[in-house]
Image (cartoon, rainbow, N blue to C red; front, side, top):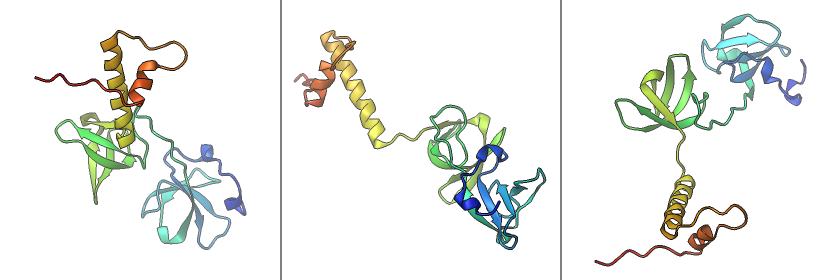
Length: 174
């Protein structure tokens, strides 16, 4: 396994909990997948199924598992920054640190918190661009209803073109 840094890493062979690939500091041919680069994280050597606890000072991270982008469906993967709404609280922005069957560890600011999965909802964070696009679509739909126009099947949408050109409904004066 020499020169693994120059080779495409096959993450399909990694355990599903693995987020990093490590190389031993002393033994040049010793590589392992790990769940994280922290004390007692799970580690599994590439050529073995044995799992053991990590001693970070003995291993260097040489690759990080590419995280899939989360589309808001199901549970967010580890590393995702998202909105969390607990059933008994206010929506906050969190980073997913660990995800289990029933519990998640999330980071809110500088604090890590345990969250029961059945007692919260995870959502995508709405960016300013996303909010603006949603508002545009809402106004265009209202304009369509006002003039009795359906979405066109082909070509340019004249209602959207009017909106993009700056046309807006005037508020009635009292």
